Image 1 (spheres, rainbow over the protein chains, first blue to last red):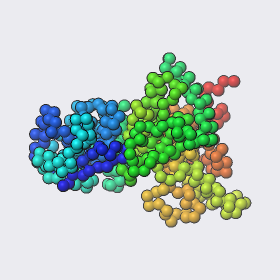
Image 2: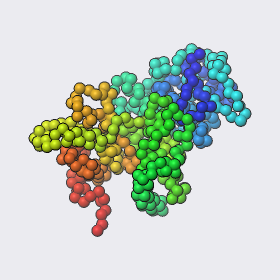
Image 3: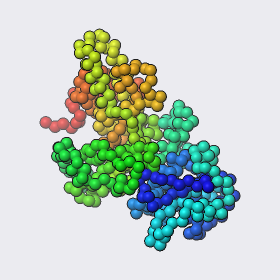
Image 4: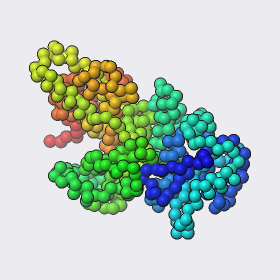
Length: 196
Length: 294
């Protein structure tokens, strides 16, 4: 099972966050149609991995979505859509879906599942249940959600454009690894401000 | 117009309050902590308990963690002010948190050494940013000066100058950081040696200097942008430098003579330094406030 459980700081213990990375997915169109149809069984954050820089950046988006969920100030239908929107440096929700969500042609997908107890669902499904549902429905190769795997999926020119990183003096004269780290930090800052 | 007036009134009230608050903090810090609860975000579980680092009139700084136990972060919180009308309070807090975050993000992108912004909740009044390791420049300089005294009180002036190499270098690095800040169109508003950190370099504890000079090593990181504004006016920039100069004069009188080195570093980093330094002459003549009447 290559589904990773994240323990995030400043998040209550009964909130569970799972994240996985799938490469060469062949049925992204089907997954997207289920999201559009609001099929409750497909309540995941499906994220186009080519638009993501690093683990840090993605997990930062997850935390941001969780913090507004806890705060009760969520602006999109649920925490999963909120994660997708948290990746955007602007407040435009449909643009966020277009850029960070999946389309029929998306090949590499990051999947995030957030589970928390509600009045109607006191008993949470186990990690195995989640994993089983994902592997039955996502047709692709599961790989570890690591910076190495992720950087192979990233479309660098696209990401640089999305976060307005072209020509940023902060990136001058830095080594490859250091550059990705700095880009992630700049992206986190842009996401935190989302254009306001 | 009304808004402007309200803000002015509020600033006035704040100054008066800040005075009493400082007095209260020094006498009984524990009760103060008890009186003002931390923001809600810090009440959720974390691997290490958030630590209150400082408390100013405007806000409080906690050390806590971001995402994982391995990533320390600074959380700046502006608590609601009971003496302010709630609507006005919410609006001011929101505006100030956002202004600070915007300035930090802009600086970071332009390569000015400042902490990265991790997360902002302007409604709740907090800002999470990168934790900067190391000590304030103030502490580094004082430690260095202190050890010089202990080494042998009356160092000959000639010899002293030679030994000041490490301090001269530090002053230039400070000037460089401030120059880059101004180049990007931001003035800090409260430049002191307490608002600059000396962050140990990655490959740290190098061979350079060694011994006493070690306390002056590290990268300069500018912090506390609570009073920063986006401005490109020579006047504002000159006032920034003036405030720093005065801060040097009062905290490190024995290093004051080296302030010119800060200006040298500033000149090297910032093309328009010439005009600013000319303005600085004017500011020195009259003080920080442009409109001093009577």
